[in-house]
Structures are given as structure tokens and as C-alpha cells.
Image (cartoon, rainbow over all chains, first blue to last red; front, side):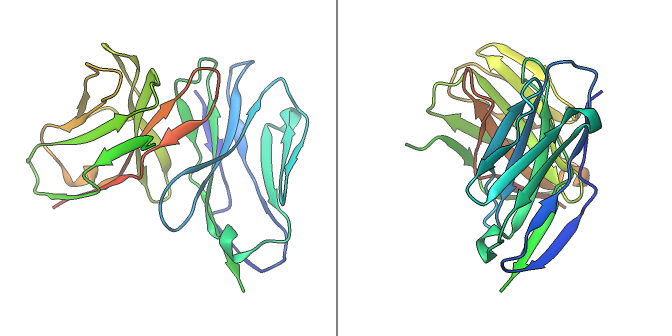
Length: 114
Length: 112
């Protein structure tokens, strides 16, 4: 069975602080996919990144960066120099080989205060 | 370009009533799915379809029916609504070769 754990329920930071969101996953598959989605207060779900299990390179996109460590089954997400617009619920998700079933974590609510 | 369109956006039902949540996409994606979002539980897969005429169950299928007669439409039916089905429902599609799910705006359902 696949499982995604986001242990942090809520994180509150002051603008310009860095914030790291933890994601730990469980799967028996040797090939799988990991995702991060953002849900701003308006409610829509926004795709941020997809990572294949055989590609352990870290990735940076602007102020966003992702640290994939297969050895610890973690796929953590860091927002550098946070801004108020980063306030949202962030979901980590795990997909099977065929990507037909995506398992989501419970989400982490990030609040960035001005 | 509408993408994924869900209707209605809000609905209030009484226990035992039936209703259908509509999902339509204009992206020509074969894969469509329904998720429900509940506080503290993330999104959970209800049903999914990999093409017209093909559907399968997800993690929480009980109390829901689906069908896929066309590529564009994937309705979710509640035959006898229960308060436990109060939730926000998302329809999502996925194209070939990408991992990205494209979500509709969500439908908030309240069952009294």
C-alpha cells in the first residue's frame, strides 16, 4: 500500500523567512512518481513539480526547491524568502507505475505573515 | 480554453437524496478521476477512468457511481446521499506522458 505522510499540519512564518515542508512516503514499487501541489485560499489545485523515483537530482525553480532522498523516502520542499502569496495548503503526492492512482498526504498549511 | 469544468460549484442535499456532479474536459485526455477533499485527510481517490467505457475504483468508492460514455464527460453520482459525503469534490484529468493532474475548480457538497 502507498502512503504519504506530511507531519507538519501548519507552519507560520514571517515574510522573507525560509520554510521547509516535509514529505515522507511509503511504497513497495521500485518505480514511482512524487508530486507537490499548491492549494491557495481560492481553492484551486496547482501543480508544482513531478519527480521520478530514478532521478534523485534536487531541483530549483525560482524560490522553490525540492530535496529528494530515496534512502530516507523523503521529498521535502523549501520556499526561500517566503512571500505572503505563498500562503496556501501544500500537498505531497505519490503515484504508482501507471500513474493512475495518486495518493495524497494530508497537506501542510503555510501562513506567511507580512 | 476551459480545461476541466465542474458543475455545480455548490450543492446542499438532504440525506437520502440523489444527485450527479458533472465533470467535462476539453483537453482530449483519456484519464479522468474524482477525488474528495476532507480536512486533515488530503485528497482521496474515489473513481477513475482510463478511457471511454472503462472505469475503476479508487480508495473510497462506496456510495458513488461513475460512468464514462464519452472522452469529454465523467459524471459522479450519489445515489443516496449521507452526511459522511459532505466534502469538496475535485475532478481531474491527465495527459499522456505527463504526470500533471489538471483539476477542476471543485464542487462543495453539503449533506444535511
